[in-house]
Image (tube, one colour):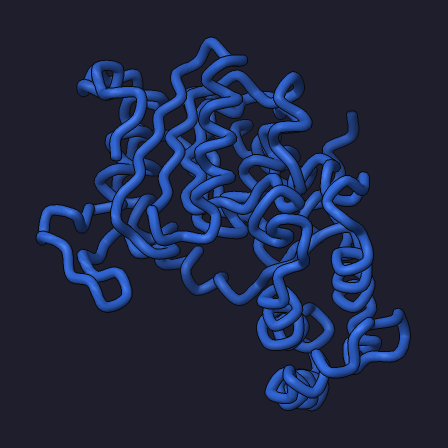
Length: 300
């Protein structure tokens, strides 16, 4: 299999809006992990479509460890879409992949998340118009185009009233990879192959999924809770490497908060997510016996 670089295309979701988060996490993790000669990869945000980004990340795992390291690499950014790219990466079993921590991660999107009970969730139409398209490569390279797409996103109710969407007839035609993805996602029901490809589904590709330790984290108030649990159960049955599941009273990405909507939980429900990551990486990248092996397989 070739680990060549990815190209933007209509086969998957593209996300660049979280690049600043990637930089912040890299700075924090590098102080501990890189100093110890281990590589933690940052997600390929904005560099390719969702399925294609798995090949880019596989290429990164293969080449980055050529510098003096232990020869093992953890997979980096982990929440939401980047968590989905971690799963896509694992499905092509790249060399040197050692461990992963997908958090609130996209996967099995035709089961729940992008489609729910068969129905397409219109929040992803909103996401494409308001977040995806204005942060596309074309938009970031052209301020006037970006402004136009941002203004178009504000008219999302008008766009929803124009359903069904057809290729070449929407304001997204200036960023055709986004328009094509949205049209296909809305056109294809949950049984269609579109939702079962690598990068879209974990449960359909368990056999190909890398046998590495995975720490699955999600919250009871996240929209991806069901998929995270499905992945944990399937991988626990199929793989020899440890699989761990942590679920708390959190919203999407809210592991550091004790607040969920209008409910305030006790302070200890907020966790230090960076410490969680480092403890896991210490065990599976450095080989430190720090009690991870003795943790309950699932904590909630």
